[in-house]
Length: 275
Figure 1 (cartoon, rainbow, N blue to C red):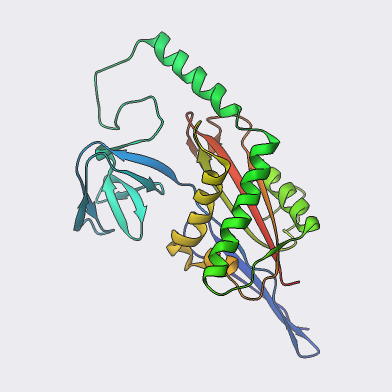
Figure 2 (figure 1 turned 90 degrees about the vertical axis):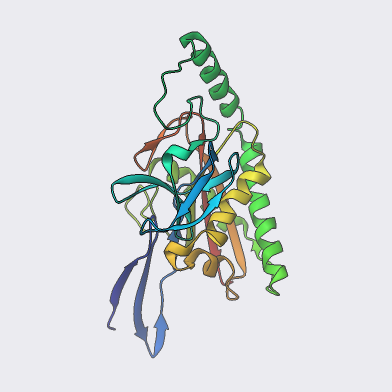
């Protein structure tokens, strides 16, 4: 048997690996594995000009609008928020939603230290109240329900939750808090077709909203991976699913080199099978 390992890297935070070979003329393909990059909400402080990756103007967004950002990119030496689909706005025109700090541009206005500390402590306490088994269970269930609704609208069969797959996915979600990778802490590769993602919640976020944010990342903001998440989750071949949901241990944990103290990071593992 001749096996050839092909590893393809597609976009930020995504990799797909397939093991190709044959036994008695039957092709073998390892499950596709995909993962989503972190996103967060930003609110425009001014009317924002929208640019493409070359720094060319492509439109504008109104002041006060809240949009999703997918990290920061430098274009011609200046910092821009990436809005996905090749769209960028200058960092100075927006600030992260929920942060106690004022807009990104320099300012001499400061709040009294006592008020800032009190607000920060209250925010973190409220965030930690979300970190409970009921929220996580409801978020995982809502993800399946919303995904199945999408599948039904496209004429696809609904996925059935498989208890063993669900238990595995929850274990994987817990592992993703400390190691966001398809290689497990024991050094072994994940066993099933798997999609993993990370995002963040605020105090007012509901389980349904948390699930939708993660599903939207996979389905609508996956250009950088050539829509690999979307293809996996909407595949006709898959019949069963298991979803696990987990939170970071505390607000402000370092995630991919960044810290978001006014958010509580979440993780999701979605495992799929064709039977």
